Amino acid sequence: MPYTFTMPTDKSFDFTHILGYMERSANECMHRIADRGVEKLIAIGDKLVLVRIEAQEGHSLAVQCPNATNSAGEAAEASIVEYVREWFDMDRDLLPFFELARQDDVLSGAVAQFAGLRIVGIENLFEALCWGIMGQQINLGFAYTLKRRFVERYGESLPWKDHRFWLFPSPERIAALDPAELKTMQFTERKADYIIGVARLMAQGAFSKSSLLELPNLEAREKALTAIRGIGPWTANYVLMRCLRMPEAFPVADVGLRNALKHVLGGDAKLSIAEINALASDWGEWKSYATFYLWRLLY
DNA sequence: GGCCAGGTGGCCA
DNA sequence: TGGCCACATGGC
Image (cartoon, rainbow, N blue to C red):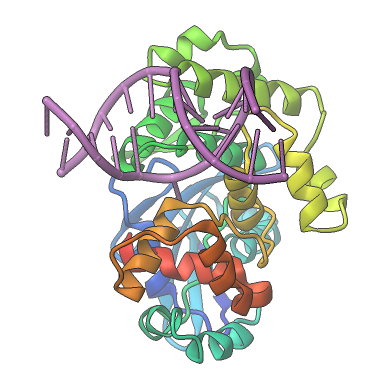
């Protein structure tokens, strides 16, 4: 029997929609979807813990730790709870967003369809930055392929039953690479440079998630991130949205957002940045959630 | 085979 | 500042 416990959820939380988002790519290597649950390897201190999460009757999640003994599971439970609450943004009250979105011509359809979806987080800052960089200017399917190659070459893993679960590689590991090595995996020279550059900065302690969180606001954090080579406004806001969980973060030039808006509004021409900013001014402090819900319309 | 993809940096006025 | 443009590689 795996160690198992229950986590209560908010009424404005719908695990079905979270799974729907997480199963959008069969090529995802950082988690696995199986039997209406998600399975992921996480590091708790120096221990690798496999967790499996599925919905349970009555506004709650069932969390299993298949590779943990009861005593190890008990010892890790508080940390796992913290990880999962962060992962699925469970501490946020989404009712104000729903109220805003229902009265918004652009958002009302997406919210009617996906109410209860949370922004699925990327807790690890290095992973969020690398994933952002990998996704720049290429189709998403290929981005998943790049990530899989990268993780399976440099990451730690745990085999369990018929599957191998992975941790994202550490900055220290990647800082030691030569860009030519990444190029053999179809990274462009620039992406190889960007990723290794970020790894070196993080490995030498130039910045971290906590150092960014100490900065007072979106503007300061965005500025700190875009000062790094390879991180422009899109990647910075993507990371502020998925990792630092700033609801007002907004990757305004995102092509997926543009396509979703075109889809909703039914026009032919793509909206300009100024037009998208004008629409988003109604979304106030909920621009990241607006973006995430609109993405779901197309992906 | 051409256009597009969850952009960014660098150059130039 | 703000507007081009090269970058590079796979998917469709």
